[in-house]
Amino acid sequence: NMSFWWPTYSYQIEEAIQYAKDKWVLVVASAWNYWTDNDVSSLYPSSYNLENIISVSSLDESKEDLAYFSNYWKQSVDIATLWTNLVSSKVWWGSWEYHWTSFSAPIISGIWGRILNWNWRYNEVKENIFDLSVSSPALFEKIDEGRKIVSLGNAENVDDWSGEEEDDENYKK
Image (cartoon, rainbow, N blue to C red; front, side, top):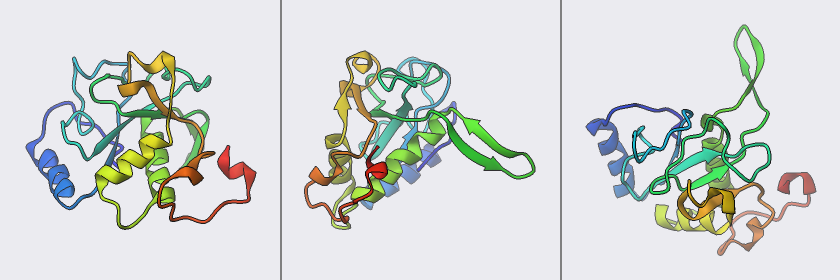
């Protein structure tokens, strides 16, 4: 999970992600928070043109369109997911509510962990994550194939499912 950004190209970061690709490792990167078209203004690492990256945007509260802050770009953003009302703690300041793509990327990383099959390579993991997504017409101009994930309700349909079935209905919401 790479929930950071850098406004300029870095050969070292790209090489590190390329090294991960060579080892068949998937990288999940947040798209970032400037409501910017990254085809025009690239933000890295999500803008590197490497096939082992999943770039993640955030959905708004309706779960149909992007959040007001979420970056987008049809060529590079792969998927959008939830972000609303995520609460985290901060040392000395108590808890805070956050609304950033940095909190959406770990959701996709968590889905990756949930459906993980240790024999899969990054392209198979990516394909199975995309198979869990649905399309949203509001996202077609902003994200590749308008993909979004709002639930793990159909996770049991993943080929070679390696997890156990969940009886807890709250888990699938």
